[in-house]
Length: 222
Length: 393
Image 1 (tube, chains in turn red, yellow):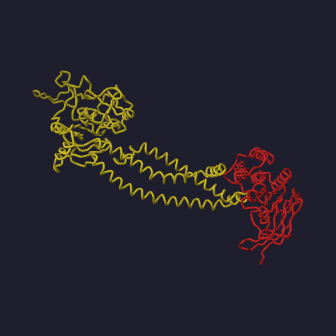
Image 2 (cartoon, one colour):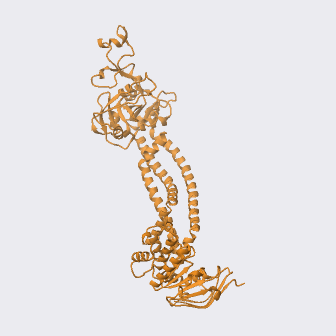
Image 3 (cartoon, chains in turn yellow, red):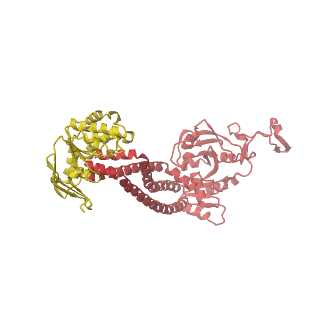
């Protein structure tokens, strides 16, 4: 699913550099990424998602070399093939849970996925236990419910790859386990690949593999 | 596009107070100059039309503006009076038709206009229900007055007392409504029309009371001296003019010296008009002549000059407000950076995000335009009343 070769990334203003000589993630694999703050975990996810461009190297996702995409087609690819989950949920406060889950459809005008989006929303919401919350605003949900809604949003386009950036970081211990279990279950149900950044070593057990950022050459080049 | 509009709409609805304030601010910026222009144009057109229809006005020396506003629109304080006898003088000159007006009294807020039957012909007023007034004490109501007073033929309306504190003042008179005029869209719609004699009776110049020569009135007689009878305060004053007591109403003095607020003068031709203007333009003449259209043009010229200043001020305030609104939008984008980042990270094109933000501005502008349009339509519909009220206040 993911293949990285001779990656070299540096922020335009300098100060941080990430080098990955080789990384392979198989389809359906569940990979955790751990590392200290500032070690480049989020940057790695951004590079895989095509949000940031490397100075050198090749990133291939689902058989597509990201460098071959134009900006527009890369965005289309991301919105169709990659589901993103954020630490702070990043639900739009003015949209109901239903509209938040449907957001990729509203942002990607050319997005065509099999099945009726509304039916898919209902199904995902039922699976994640927020069916009764679909017409509420995010502010009316608990933290755990918000992250469930965010997981639904990431899965709504049936992507092959889920990139989760510390999705349990804002949750209490009980909710952490629940949300992680739910995420893993949904990823398995949908046959997706999961790359999840986490600080929490207690959550690593269910993953197929753990990547430690210390294995890559990351940090201040000076 | 539907999705863009939907997202913009949801944002505006969620932030309804902010949206409401923005719409209100932009609406005011759009509405004020627009309404000012429309209302002034329409109102001045109508005001001028009535002035054009009234060739000349005779009145007492004083402000021509007060004379014109009072005699044409009935709303201001009545102008100073001239002698009713001038009507006969003008008629006798053969230069014009003279139509007297007596103003200043009211029925529940509606102006009472004492005049002659010529007024109805001159203004082309048509009776929609009932008949014209035939005798004193009868009234014909303008369409709006009939509605306001909820009165029609067969009903009675009572004039307002001059002052409630003057116990010796004139009594309110009950007027018998015999007709209602068709609506004209002019101040005539608001008026209660009576003949001049009735107007004088309302003003206390004429009155009616029990016949003191009759034996039953002896209790009201203070002194008899041949033909002269002096009554005491117990004499019964009539409060309504009827066919039965019409004969008991009388006036003391020469009717020619009785007051008229103005005399509409319709010259038989242009030359007669010029002659009449010349006749009454002596500085010390007891009667002043005014050409209403000239007076109104002078007034409107002043109004239009003020309008330029007002529009300039509104434009400046509008620019300042628009700059503030632009600032609000820019600050709002900064505050929404996290939201915008989320959308772009999910896969939204920058143009898509800009379209959503633009749609929000567009929806606010469209709502403001619609609201401003609605307000302008209302202002146009009620503008004449508003403008006249402002002028006469």
